[in-house]
Length: 221
Image (tube, rainbow, N blue to C red; front, side, top):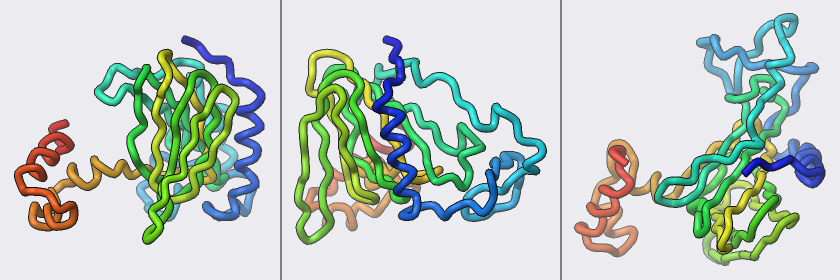
């Protein structure tokens, strides 16, 4: 299924620009195209000579193509951040295309460096996020085509296709590199593994259950 990006997506992306003060610092020049060949490590990306910048440094093709959802969770994300568009370096924005098979799920995760705004292009999604401790309150809503929802920076959130057809959504971030921490993968699939004693006490589960979960989310998977 090919999707033509509608006006609402463009409005969504432009609105994220007003949030950039809350995340990545402002650029002090017209642009700072990331130099992918540099070995210098900084908080962001090193700029290449602006005289060498080309249109391709600010371009990405392919968000009209669906991602591969033939996996256990039935979903796929196609990111467009500074790694795909070097010209996003220092501009404080990025985006992602999200594809869902019926019953497909974007599992609980966080973006440590960005707030996310999502707009549904096709289908029906149940989305939600959990507020911080000690409240831990779930804020959730069913979204239909054209609906927009916001996930505040750093909070655990999810998206689930509750419809009987494929669903498509676009997300926009106020960071060139929002990052992602998938909760289950991070806790039960870390390398090296977190101690069974720590996890069994934290989750009040038998160590055999912890071993099983680590087997499901470990590096081999």
